[in-house]
Image 1 (cartoon, helix red, strand yellow):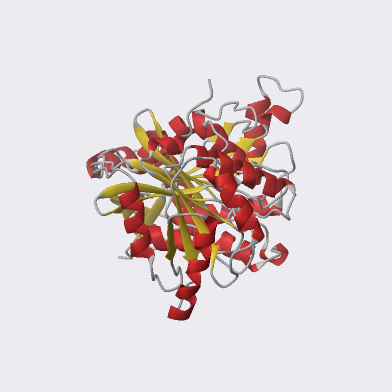
Image 2: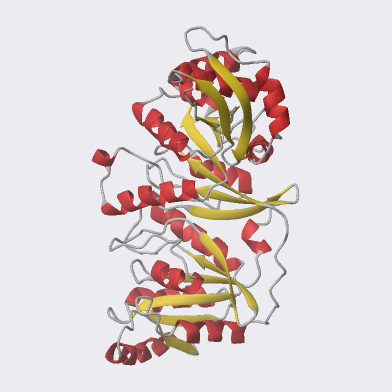
Length: 443
């Protein structure tokens, strides 16, 4: 039996469809009050299914921004866009057909409306880019599509958005908003260079083809949120744009997508650093890992395409971990999971490990426990005699510690590394960076 798509768990699914560059994503952003969808003056930007909840007039709504469709494009990506649009329309409550009053009614739209009507869903035409009174008057042309409701809208100015939402609520049966759950929500972002399998992993975890997967790099250009419940815990998966060196970024859109990837890291609770285990580790892999490390976010290393590694033995994983540790010595505290996003091998282990890492990052250790243990583990005096008074944890996520010592010399980096290792061996914090501050006083 085919698994029920995750977006069916959300009420009142309203799907935005339309030709490329008519302003669907800008309209979507206006409706949900955020900049979730990538917007720029370039066609075919939205390639994945972007779903976000909203509430209007005490009614739960779920809006889906789909890829821009174009009959003239026949490449692999556009065929996937068409397939994805069809799948979500089957499960929709309302279709919002977004058009452009500046371009007028096209033969393509006349043909497409006939296909949309076959789904037997209510259709509202949003005559977008009606940025002035003169342009709003042009919206009447779209009644030729044979729909009952044509509403002029302007994603740029916000004009007509309220009327559009009113029409949506009147069309569906109102449902009172559900009370927000007290369950903790973990935001899990997947970051790596281009074409390492990030979207394939999201699809594997969701159990559906939510993301468009292709061998063409940069299929995902913007962070896409997917919501799932696992073991009665709400988890948000964020699939980010593949990252290349800035010098190799071909378009402004790609650069914007990269910027939003780093913003996605900032709102994550745990970051999955994903790389291709079947290929050589590159300077870009190291650069991305370093930037995630600098964000001070909890991290899990995901070695994808493990199914392609030949002649594996019981010691292959151990040898690979040793090799990875030499390449990324600053990530020795990050756990590693070996998966195949394509086959699903070990993919579901990511949820359990991520929740464990998330929990570890929030731990608070009592001052007396820290001081008692570390007093017995202080390094030999050597060339830097010091007096240890105590240590306390000042914050979590990331775990931060303040060591109270007296010394006449500056503490070297090796001292901080030693203290971090002692804290980890006793108190854990797997997957979390640790910050140690010491304010030695000369006396």
